[in-house]
Length: 263
Image (cartoon, rainbow, N blue to C red):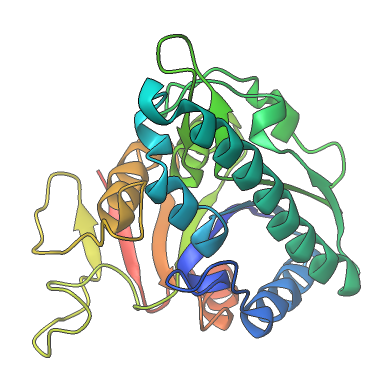
């Protein structure tokens, strides 16, 4: 039996460039995968990204930087909006899981976590499974911070780090990507880009971070987060989430197409 910690990337479940645009087909495929993993006796914990439900408004109002007195009223409104939008996205994902017979327990970070980065404040024991058939779900969110910042963005990747390192029975930590098979040697639109099968901590890669849409660090944060998790979890992978059968293949045969991150 494996305990899989799986990140549904925001670029996989939404169109990051189009405000609040959901990819229902991708979500349903992920739900079917989750159901199959449970049927095979495994435990699943899910973290999902914000995609176009969080990044665009957060970027517009500089929420990742914290309070700015010049636009604080607008920022406070945006904080409330993004939190509501994330609850909506989470409900769409949980509804899809429920339709596939998966019982879920949702944990909105704004209700139990504060501060940002992998050292954020919050009790991770809530992700200790009381039942192998209940899937705990959490997501990137706007959380409260100490003054003078007051609020900030807690990334789903930082949630992955804390859960991966603090829940002792996690056997696999898998980041599902929306536009690539794993970590590439160059940006995906470069014809010379090749898949890096194994990434060792400290490796370097040429890349590009789309700061116009992404406020949490993109692929670079995912790789850094995966490196931290690999300190305690043996199987840490970045995989093409458009092909969820690769997760099933990984669990069954201990290998698949993607990037394995090791120390």
